[in-house]
Amino acid sequence: MVLILPDFGINDINGINGNSYTQKGVTLNYSEFVTTKYMDKMSPAGDLARDIRDDPHFPELEGMDLDAARQTVKTYLKCLGACDGCMAAFKYTWSRYRAAMRQ
Image 1 (cartoon, rainbow, N blue to C red):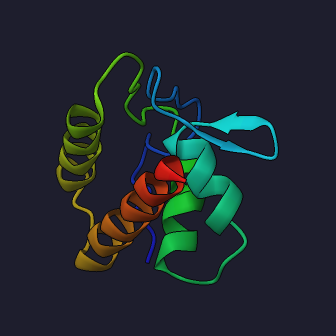
Image 2: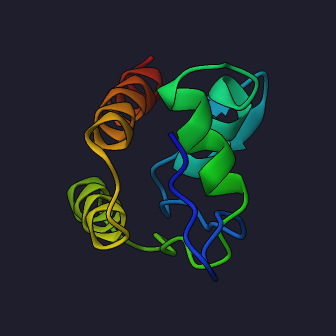
């Protein structure tokens, strides 16, 4: 499953202002969380992580609340024609990110 379209990749992502996950003293936004946790996985979540890493047009989420940020990413992926597997990977990684933020 590859999401990248011509002129699209997934990099330069800013995080959610005030809504980030701290791991070993390092604060991670959603995109950093996904690429840190899943980029080396051979799975739909790993595919999404690599796509996020390579996409210079991935939405900037700075200053958005979590619901708006989630909807922004979901809409972006759908506009790119993301397959069901990609959307499921987004749903899964977002839920893991939210769970990690609560710890």
